[in-house]
Image 1 (cartoon, one colour):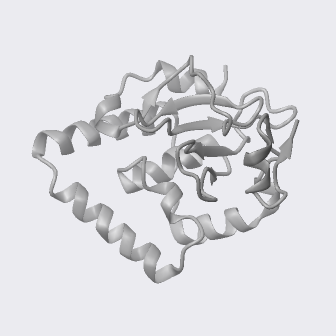
Image 2 (cartoon, helix red, strand yellow):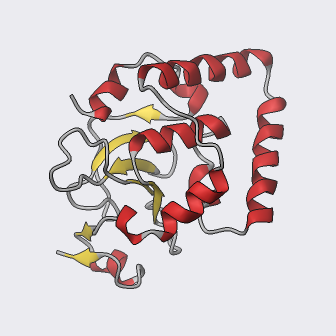
Length: 187
């Protein structure tokens, strides 16, 4: 059973986490060829996918990307975590599934400023919203045996800088490739 199949079996409040599971998703030009889309944000076509590594039948060691097809900057395709468990772990820590891609490639002071902002935003939610988020987070944590990452800043910076954590991505549309500075490829 793949990690994504396990994820689909968990009964959590999708609206509380703003992470809508999706098994059938109509891909955009910005969706890498062969990617397995597992969730969408429900706005502007933003979705998350795993790009399977050769031989990784469980998808445990394949990178996660956020695809934002309506973002015409260089942030259309953003490497998000070196694997699915880390993606969930970081997002659980932030209590926000939108936040993670915004934290990649920024300076330490700005990073910790964002963390404080996310804590504040969580703190001002209604008690019922907070409770729903916390219950959903616990369901994900327990069901997927998620381990917390102690130093998020170091993890994100080190993992993002290590080219071994990235995957060669192929796209059907040439314009996606051109904006990615040669990292990605047109088929």
